[in-house]
Each structure stands twice: as structure tokens, then as C-alpha cells.
Length: 229
Length: 174
Ligand SMILES: Nc1ncnc2c1ncn2[C@@H]1O[C@H](COP(=O)(O)OP(=O)(O)O)[C@@H](O)[C@H]1O
Ligand SMILES: [Mg+2]
Image 1 (cartoon, each protein chain N blue to C red):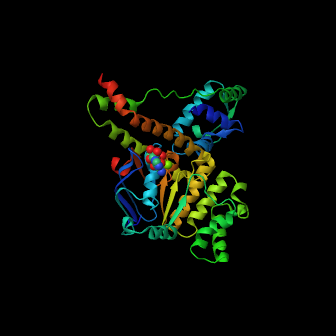
Image 2 (cartoon, each protein chain N blue to C red):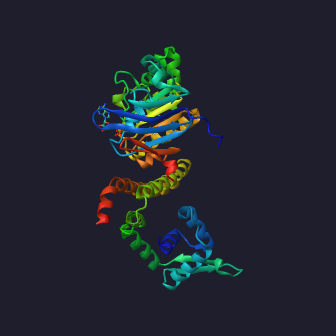
Image 3 (cartoon, rainbow over the protein chains, first blue to last red):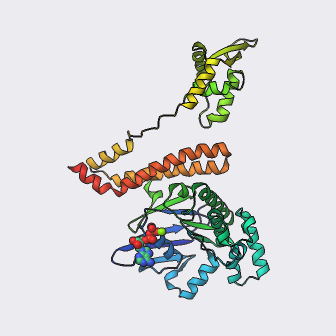
């Protein structure tokens, strides 16, 4: 173990309401480079809302999110979406791949969007498909592959442009345990190798067991379980 | 686990010496807890007495570890009926954790913290088993998964009890 690095992404006192009841009611979070932190808790407790605030997809009503020393509240929408493209990767419960594109094109997409030439992007995409053990589906469309394969393609897409933080919201939620475990093993191995931090939202303990530590969200409040023990 | 049945089962493929049996057992089933030699010999003595094994030969040099054991027909029948008989599912009705939660509520101590501390401890073990599983072979995976599914069940109970703590506190106070 090397000396603990400075946190890469932190949030303090986050509040967010969609209606009368708050989705987040004073949540804190912090993650260091290369760390995998599980966000656990019952459904409806505010896990996804926390992830959206951390990733700058949703603006919190109160509280602060700091990424790499900068406050996200002070950024314009354009700055935040540029940050998401450059530094963040995303994996959701249902792959959310573009159905008209092949798996290879889907994985190459983030690099294409940030200006990489097609040939170079697809070469890099092919490496990531291979690493996620789905090289064989490169030419297929998402509708033609299994759920487990689709999620591994989604993980490849999340990692292809070398993000510093990967946000994964129930990445195994639609998979059986064997496929879920495979996705988790490949995701955490790849993240450790590339020193990407992973914010892993899950309500399943066996999935959270792939993390380095966990926080629990209940009724919009977070609890750091390292301090509980 | 029934060590006697496991050793008998290992003898079905051919006679073995005591030390050889221990090695075979440890390799396949020992994992965290290798068998003690003493346990092997006391088990073999019992199987011998019950006619489930017989001494197939003794090497020069003496000592119990020189005995070679072979399974008898009665032993084969015994293994067969053990395998055919389902294990009684563990009823899990005696739980220390439940007792601790109720006592915490009764004595006005923080029951929610107790549950969270336990939760963190369970997840810590689950992480360790997951690391072992991802580094291991298929046998490690299956054995770790068995433990992981049980720990997960405990953890779900802890989570559910956390959510019902207010209700339980009201009942306990009556
Ligand atoms: N876009 C939204 N509009 C209205 N309510 C929402 C929205 N997103 C989340 N909520 C509400 O906020 C609460 C927390 O939701 P969420 O963060 O999705 O929880 P979790 O991911 O833990 O299941 C829930 O009560 C949910 O109904
Ligand atoms: Mg959610």
C-alpha cells in the first residue's frame, strides 16, 4: 500500500429535492485515485441522485462537489459536460449502447467525440473489447449480444478514453450472478490497472464486495462504514 | 461435516495409507482447516471397528501411519446412502445478533450502531473472500461463493432489521 493520495472527488453536505421529500438530505462522499467505493443502501434511498450530483449531471440544491481541487458548482454547464467527456466514464444498469452502431463503434464513440480519428479510436476500442473478453462481438449490434456481453461492452466504452473516475450505477443489476461477477471482476481489474477511481452504486453486498470500502445511503443521508467499524 | 464419510468416499477409488488419506482430504476439502493426524487415525479406528474399512497391508517400520486401509462392501453401501440422503437445512433460528439487538434496545444502547458495525465486519470478510475467489481456481470459487451467499443473507437481514428498528424498539418497550 502506498501512502493515501489526496481525494480526487469529494462532496459535502449535499441536498437535493425533487418534491416535498428530499432525495439527498446531507450526504458526504470522497474518493481517491484508483479507489473503488461502493455506495449501498435500499432502493429509493438516494444512491443514484448522489451519483448524478457527483458526476455533475444534476446540480445539488445545497452542498459542494469538488473535483481535482475545483468546485463543480462554479462551473458552467459547458465546462461540466467537457469535464464529463474528458475525465469521467459511465456504466448504467442497462448498457445504454447506441443500437444502430456496432459494439466496436459504440466503444470507439467517446474517443470520436473528443476528436480522435476513426482508425485510431477503433484500434483502441478493439483493445478494450479484447480486455473485457468480448472481442468476438466487435462487429455485432447491441441487440445481437447477450446481457452480460452488452455490459462488458459498456464497461469497455466507459474505460476507453482513460477516465479518472468511472461512475457505475447498478452495473450488474440486470445480470445473473455469474455474469454479474464477471463484469465486476473485469471492471475492477481494469480500473485498478489504469488507476481509475470507481463510484460503484449497488444494493447487492456480493457486488459491493469488489470495492475497497463502502458508504451506506439511508433516507438521503450517507454513512461512512469505515467509521462505523 | 462428516469426516468419516468423506474419508470413506476417498477410499472408494483404491486403498490408501493414513497419511495419504489426510493429504487427499486436505487437498480437496481442507482449505482453511487441514485435518489433524490424530483425527484421521481415530476416525479410521472407528471405521475399522464398524467394519466399513479393513487393513489391506502394513508396511515395515510399524506405527499407525504404516497401515493401508481399504473400503469394505459395507463401507461402499454406507457412502452411497450418505450421498443419497439430503443434508438437513440449517434452520438458523438461534441468532446471537437478534439477541444483541433486543438487549441493546432494552438497555438503551445504540442498536443502529451495533447493526452497522456488524454490517461493516461482514462486508470486510466478503471482500477478503472475493479477493481469494478472483485469485483462485474453480474449487476456491465454489467454496468462497458458498460462504459469500450465506454472508450476503446475513447482511440482508441486518439491513432489514436496521429499517425496522423503530418498530422493534416500540415492541420491546411494551
Ligand atoms: N428525476 C426525478 N424526479 C423526481 N423524483 C426523483 C427523481 N430522481 C429521484 N427521485 C426520487 O428521489 C428519491 C431517491 O431516488 P434515487 O436517487 O433514484 O434512489 P436509489 O438510486 O437509491 O434507488 C426517490 O424517492 C426517487 O423517487
Ligand atoms: Mg438508483
